[in-house]
Amino acid sequence: MGIPQPAFYMFKCEQTAPPGMPKPSCVTPETQDLFQHLAQKLMKEGIMGTVQPIRTSCMNRCSSGPVMLVEPGHVMYAHLNKEKIDRIVEEHIIGGNVVEEYVIDKEQWDEPITPANMKKQMGM
Ligand code: FES
Image: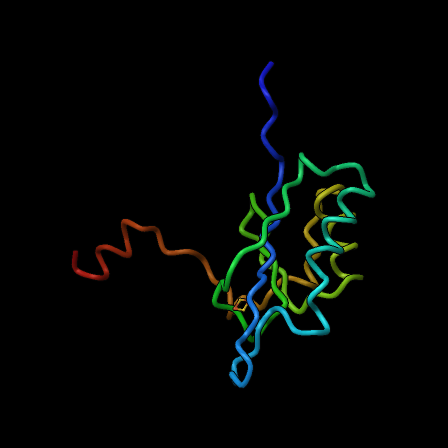
């Protein structure tokens, strides 16, 4: 038997807006320890490895930050804090049920466009 691949990837945006930038961002002094909190929660639950936390740069949903994308499933969670991360790990990752009340607005995260269709739209 080979090395099992992870069951889930959790992509936490770790972008900080440069000082003076008006744009909101996912990492502020108040939210800078969320990735560490996520990693600790996964370790505490004994599921680190089958769940892989990943730091990412901006995912273009800054105004809904702090955001985190869970794959598989394309589930984008918004306005995170430590309590929400705990619930996402317990109910979604372990329990198998998406925490709908923390999912980003559909307006901000609509169905994807396939790369083939995007090429067509671009006339390529
Ligand atoms: S800074 Fe996190 S989505 Fe842009």
